[in-house]
Image 1 (tube, rainbow over the protein chains, first blue to last red):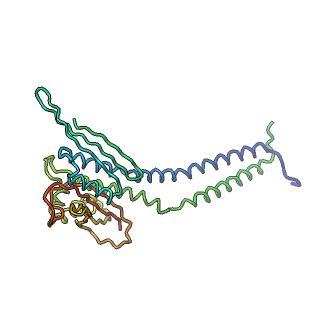
Image 2 (cartoon, rainbow over the protein chains, first blue to last red):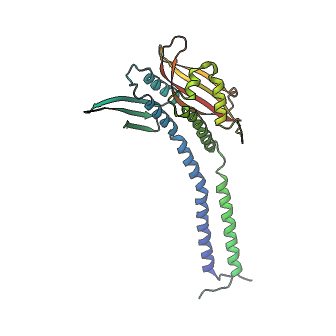
Image 3 (cartoon, rainbow over the protein chains, first blue to last red):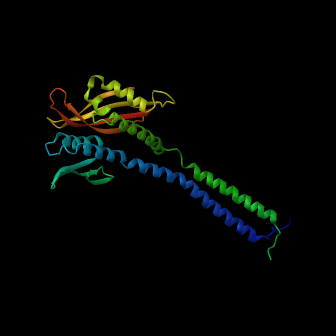
Length: 127
Length: 170
């Protein structure tokens, strides 16, 4: 063993290649937890429950048609911006279509929702 | 022809590479500590639980067209708070049969005063007073009630109020 053996260079090179690829695989595995966290945070940020809730309460009020003087309308606008930080506006309308035998009644609602991150618009007709 | 001499050096090289790889992996992995941002994941679970409980309370029983329990609770100040406490603690598995959660809550509802357009909050019930150190999350539910708001000067009629519940684990 007087000098360093410089045989098997190809095998060493292949060993390096394999170890580098393993290193990059380890990096990818390491990132996967971050991906999970980001997804969970964006799920929280999206106001799914708020939108469902405001949409449901407005339709529950459909039929009692909102005018500017409707207290429920004013309640929803004021409470929404001051307690939830979301700008909400909506229009409710009832249209009677007089047919030859019956009169059809349909409720319409148009909802705008914006909490600074998410904007949501909804147009609904009762059939 | 591949030369098969110097095999021990090769094995040594592979071992050194593995050790370096392991070290690098450990160092990179150690930087992702449990930050407060990760706490959002358990917040999300609490938020789902609370808003599901409120949704269940806002459904009229037996399919009859009547007021939901949550509407009745707000319309009746005298017994409403106690009823809210019983229902909400049952639905969030704080009381009742089976495994229990250690969840505390503080509930109130907010309404608009028509005279000057200010907001007033009324306490419904709470399982414990907030001290300020809790990591609470908030769930809300819109309810339309038939009530005089404010109770002394208001006119009886349909009004929208916002039920807000703070939830935390102790």
